[in-house]
Amino acid sequence: MERIYIIDVTNRDGVQTAKLGLSKLEKTMINIYLNELGVYQSEFGFPTTKHESRYLQANLELHSRGVLKPIHLAGWIRATTEDVQTALKLVPKLNNLNLSISTSEQMTNGKFQGKKTRKDVMKIMTEAVDAAVALGIENIGVNAEDASRTDISYLVSFATAAKEHGAKRIRYCDTLGYDTPFSIYQTVKTLAKESEMPVEIHCHNDLGMAVANSIAGARGAIDSGQDAYINTTINGMGERAGNADLTAVILAISKSKDFSYENRLNGINLSKAWKIARFASYAFKVPIPINQPGVGANAFAHASGIHADGVLKDPQNYELYDFEELGRGEPESVETGREICSGEYSGVSGFTHIMGKMAISFKDKKEAEDILELVRYANVEAQKPLVEDELLFITRYPEITKKLLTLTPLE
Image 1 (cartoon, one colour):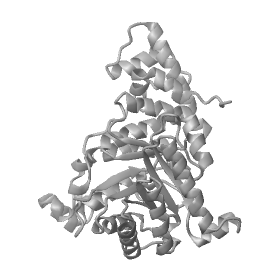
Image 2: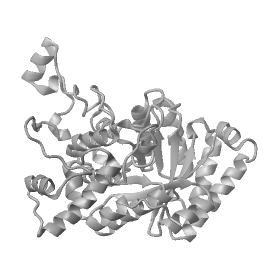
Image 3: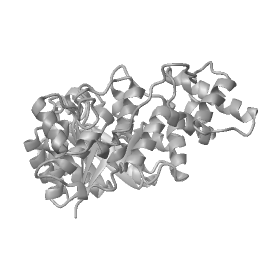
């Protein structure tokens, strides 16, 4: 049976949201939460960007230790030989790579200004794939940027060439959110059938159809006999109007009428959805919309008398799924009296008090001071109090944390 795999791109596309960003520790926590959720792969960053290098290396070390497993960690680069070589020089243990290049006539003409033809694009892409294969990259995906405005005959040729040179997947990018569920279904079905390749669906939300387009595209791949990979971001973060929301995509796959492909999803633990949505909201400093599917404040709120009466008699009258499925329902406590916070100017007494509330003790004052120093630096980078899971991570993995916090420019 053909499968659907979730590839979350929050740490690559989500962090490209204008005017926002994440610290390296926050990106690491998102990878940990995605792993707990059962997401197949995190596109965890840019291996040609020097300030990402230590973060990427640290997360690959967490993977080798078994902390970030079974999730796959993939880097994103431009589909050029130079980028492939730079990526492997800066992050030598990288094993999963997505190579991206524009394929539409609009972008070929508009971005390259007549200096490159689509024949040149094909040559540049295949040479980059050859370079990645030669350097030992095992899992190579090739991204057709602006695929939704690219003619299908060129897309098939592009995907087939990528496959012949060693790529494992073709990423169909609806870069401007131009597709409809009807158009993307047919295009992806044809692309998957003709190229005989699994298709990765990457949809933007400019017209409000990113989730619908994602599952329609996935179905097109499955109906052609190929696996489907859907790109998501937590809370739909991303360029312009954002990307397909992680929780909404999972709910649509597993709960919607005439789809219900939950048995095609690999190991998703939806009970972690509430936790990861709240953390991303806090880390990005962007509130979750009140009507966000599954995780919005009103997702299970009922005001109408008819609705309230019906849901009290039987929740299934007005709810397609239970709030407990998403990890919701536990009471939240807010301290309104004395509160001790950790920050960039914290002292060891207050810090040991905070950690003691989490049942964490230190063997001596020196150990507490060493961990506190890392916490201070993490607070400087985040410019907001750390959540409990971040404090626990720093305590458990101080050496990894040092790498995440090291932003000295590389020579």
